[in-house]
Length: 371
Image (cartoon, rainbow, N blue to C red; front, side):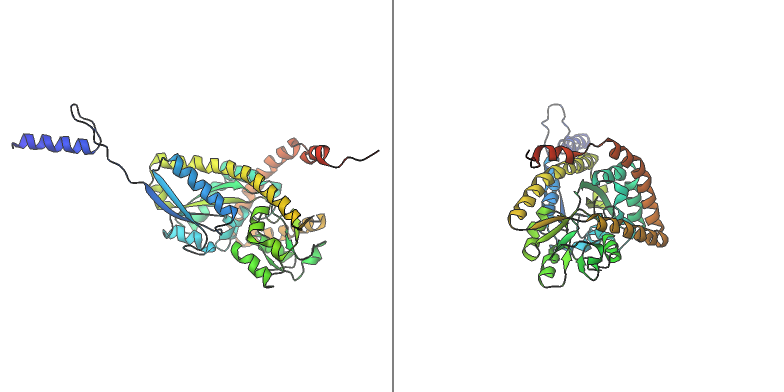
């Protein structure tokens, strides 16, 4: 075979294998293996939070047409819940699902994304600040300064969390003195200011600790999670409304090297899947939490509104916590100032424009007075 013919054959073979059609020659399609990622959540397998993690993965897997496949394992499958961030950064896991408050021990500023009253912003407003008011850039800066090789997405505004589950209802702030209590993030500092002895246990360990008397009371998150975790089996009183975690959201983590290596198409799919999952989670939460709220009442659980005096004590405690954290941590002050600036404008607008939904609810559903 001449050199010219050999060169031509090599060119045609290369072009066909590469997927480029040449006149007179059929294109040979080469199947590409999907990019697979192994993830872990910080939640027990039965918790609705783990379901949210699976929901996000399902959206990505389907939207990518199988080009990217994310498998999500429950907490403890590879690492402990509180070790997730380091595991993702090191590449032990390709990604994960949790909350930013869990990384409070690395930099107290990260707990501002979830703990505390957020200057009166609801969780969706905190996400607005994160995405449009500078929060995202500040969180990325903190992770970079901690030498964490992660790509973070926040999503999924959580409804206001209960003050906690108790053996008997609390009626005043003084009732918290000496109570062995579970919470996480900056909420730890709030409850300590109220006089509680706080233990920041992961979700799966709370109910066993309550059952054995290692805890007197605890909070986790919502009616569905609390019911499935078994809170009604060890306590029959749940205090609703609180400022300790009134505006939290979820975090989706990728190992940054693995994320950066993805093609632009898959990065766009991930971005839009985050937004879609955020809305879907909000709608599912309303349906499921309200259902489980009613079911627990049927089972004998008593729900109480946290007295305003305790809520005011939480705000006063928060002022002390913030002053101390800002004095010792410049990044804490930087994040808090950014959130304050956004909240002053956005909060005023929301408070001025929102109608009193409770008035309308009572109009339709409250018992009518006779006579």
